[in-house]
Image (tube, rainbow, N blue to C red):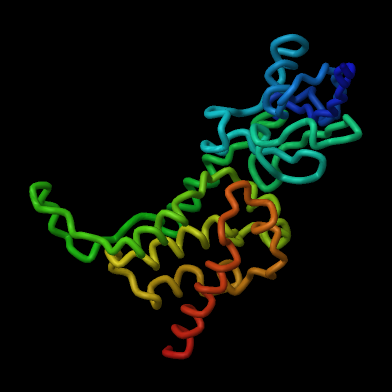
Length: 245
């Protein structure tokens, strides 16, 4: 039976609330266990070595998106990353860039997502304003429901934002997550907004025409969402809107 590996974690540490603290990398050693994920390793480190270590988690199953961080240079989810994937046994952890830092590996993705939702009005604007709760719900074609469900799988982890070169260069860019959510409402037959309405929201360099198509969002998305397919779809729709103006 082979001996368990010793993993070396190099973790970004910084508390922005402490005026005396400075950004630094700290090293930790931990014994690898079968099936260990980066998430499991972080919890073990916090329990046995450093209780001050800050990182986020909720579901531990790749559903909540809370544990997103940069692992060996790639933004992804800690709970879905096996330590066995790193032959060198050396793992570096950094917080997601592009978000407000709370501390160490914890960033405020919630604030970003809320501001994005308010900016793009990411909620259903129904055709019918009659809110009678006793009325039978309008049926939806299974094909349309399947398309909407595919786009609803986004867990708002922020990985696509951190992997986006356009977003890093232009902070006002809405990012793939914003465009994905706009596509979801553009496809919804219950929404009263037209392509022209959406054009006035994302038909610019901060929206769908600003994407440089480098595929960072597509490559990094832990849920394998069709980001580029939806961005191309919106570009076609917005281009038609431009020609009609």
